[in-house]
Each structure stands twice: as structure tokens, then as C-alpha cells.
Image (cartoon, rainbow, N blue to C red; front, side):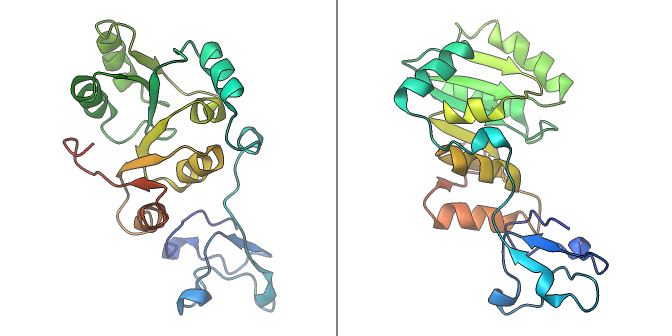
Amino acid sequence: AVITDLGVPHATWRADGADLVVTPVSGPARGRPAPAGPRPGAADKIVLTGLPVGRGFRPGPATQAERDQLRRSAGQRESAFLVVLTGGGEGAGRLGRRAAAVLRGVPDVDLAVICGRNARVRRRLARLAARSDGRLTVRGFVPDMAAWLRCADLAVSKAGPGTIAEAACCGAPILLMSHLPGQERGGVLRVTRAGAGRYPPRTSQL
């Protein structure tokens, strides 16, 4: 059982029959019972580790030369301040509204929006991109998210633990625009307390 919550894991993670439980946070260290248990008699099979990420995130932050190459490959301007906005694989988090607010309120940045499987918001943003003087790039589900985060100056996302871990690996500071009630709040706290990003939940704050 691989737990991905960065806060106190949700009760549904409990897996009494598991042979091994891998978790990024320690329940007992917080003075709480372990959030998920392995099969009876295997209490030593709880492994505290980081979140698993794809191979593309392992090289870490890009050098300037690598960033320039990644931007050229993605069709982005090398000299611009690049913001990558994503809502995870499902494209959640009011991406359309937030993308429009960034373009309107911060005229000196370029914006790439990764819409995931959200075809509706992708179509809406494609119309906006046609009027953005080249500042807005819109993509659906991408297989190379590591490349986008490694060449970004700033990532903007919901507080999904996977995106937080991936941005951290790539050295991209992150603005967390929303989180699921409960377990994702822990990710917000970890990011903001570490100084790795901020939490502006309202579009006006973003």
C-alpha cells in the first residue's frame, strides 16, 4: 500500500492485509496511531520514505542551458518569465478563470496551462490563446510534465501531493490555489512552512 497524502492520511488508506506500507509521513511520529497497517504480525513493514515520482523528475533542477533547450522544445520563449498552471490529470481547479486572471493581471509573464483530460477547459482556453499575443500555451494531458516543470519559473496548481513532489524535485516554487478538504491541507502546510511556495486560494490573491 503506497500512501501519497502529505498530511495525516485519510482513514480509507488503511490496509490491514498489506505486506508492506510505504508512507511519506509518519503517523506515530505525530503522536497518532499509524494511518495504515500491514497484515497482522508485520508491524515492522511500515516504511517511511518520500513520494514516488517518475524517472523524468529524478535529474532535479535544470541548468540554464537545459532550461533554454526545454523551452525551445516546448515552443516557449527563453527570455520570458514562464508560469505553468496545472490542475492535475483531471484539469481541476477553475483553470479557465485563473488563467484569464493571470493574463489580465500580470502582463509581463507567459503562461502555459496543462489541462489534463479536461477537454472543456482546453477548448475554452484555446479561444483565449488566440487573443493572447503568444503569451498563452494550452496543452491537454502531457507525457512530459517533468520537462514543463523543469523549465518553469513558477508552478501554479491544486495541492495534489504528486504535483507538490514533482515541483520540489524540479526546484520550481509553487503557488497552491486549492486543496481537497482534510488530507491535502497537510501538503499546503508543508509547502508554506518550508518557504517553497504560497497558498493564495482566491483568484484575486493569485
